[in-house]
Image 1 (cartoon, rainbow, N blue to C red):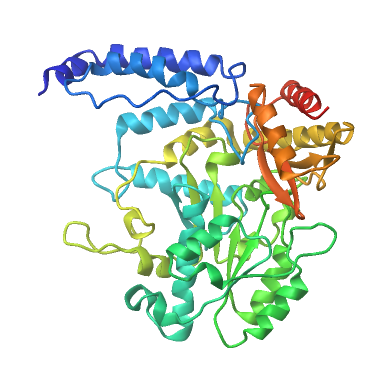
Image 2 (image 1 turned 45 degrees about the vertical axis):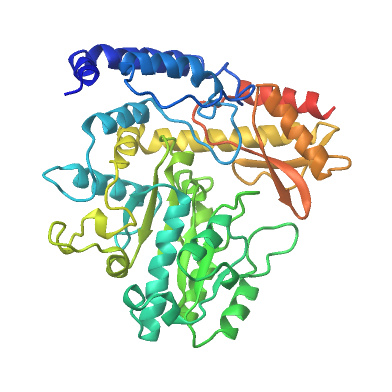
Amino acid sequence: MHRTLAGDLSRLPELLQAARDLAVREVAGLAERPVAAPGRAPGRAPLPDGGVGGDGALARFAERWAPGFSGSAGPRYLGLVTGGATPAAVAGDWLTAAFDQNLCGAGGSWAQELERETVAWLRELFGLGEAHSGAFVTGATMSNTVGLAIGREWAGERLGVDVSRAGAAALGPLDVLSGSPHSSIAKAMSMLGLGRDRLRRVPLLPGGREAVDVAALEAALAERAGRPVLVVANAGTVNTVDFDDLRAIAALKERYGFWLHVDAAFGAFAALSPRHAALVDGLDAADSVCVDLHKWLNVPYDAAVQFTRRRDLQVAVFHNASAYLGLPEEEPEFLHLTPENSRRLRALPAWFSLVAYGRAGHREIVERSVALARRLGAGIEALPGLRLLAPVRLNVVCFTLAADPSRERVAALARAVAASGEAYVTPTEFGGVPGLRAAFSNWRTTEADTERVLRVLAAASG
């Protein structure tokens, strides 16, 4: 064994303690560190030859790179839809690395059963029935990709084509209908050989809504009668957290027989709150569902889950049979269900957080996030320099400058907010108007944080 490696092994407890001490310092100061990274990144260093050992690597990381990491796990990082990591989830993630289980198959481990238990708990949390099975993937993009891949196989089944063998070209053109699809849908279509140009946008409800007009969707389906169609419904759009009428779309499914995929990346968490659960009524009727867990479940990156009613078609797409891997059985191993063979035990941080805080704890995070978003929205309405672009429906505040909201001026506002070190928001465009969006999903965020964000916005827009 290499001398430095052997040395690290002999003092592994001390090395882990040093890493723990650094992590504790960073987490303890998270609420006050700059939310966005200051200054320029250091230049690239040459690849080490001899190596400096674990302690040396830790010291170099702490000196060169740690100061430039964002405070994205903290309470005032409101960009994208970014959760943090609950204490129990961090513990679970550390143990994920320590146990280093490969979820390609059983491999003499109970790890797969832990993931199946976690998936079952999540299915219950989101109000899905036992007809849905699921697996962990990296994020919403991969979850959407898996769902559409299964839908592609379903379309082949309708046409008498085995797509997993013959390829997507054997299908001919396959339309995907959606009102306000997330950009990952087009990306998934590109990867799956369906083509970005087959995404057909359906008209939306009037009045600045992002929800699909169900009558317009029915007309689009009627035009395509006799051909299989994939419909992507949205449970929580990125800009304004608008929800398609899932029950009405499910009723159309009874008449037109399309594949229904629901992108509920963070909107599925509305199911946790009695005040908002009606927004996801009808979710159980979906053929496939996307939920992103490193958003509102507040587990570390990367973690999402996908659900489907057609595990048989999922196996047809993703099975990986070989002499050493074996064939899919009645309860397929995860390597037969998602694009990856080898992967880490992503379920463990989620398992820890669900066991530690339960349904009630995660409901509190959801309801507090919504209340804080509405508080910020009310504060923005009271500022003369800003205006809301849409009502605050759930946990995202979409807003812009009250006067001359040009792309340049709005971008300058975003830069000013980031430069303050107090908050971070991301740019968007809604109704043709450049704007900004603040997304509340971090378990740490409080009313005091929201007031700090509001003060920064007032100063930057005044």
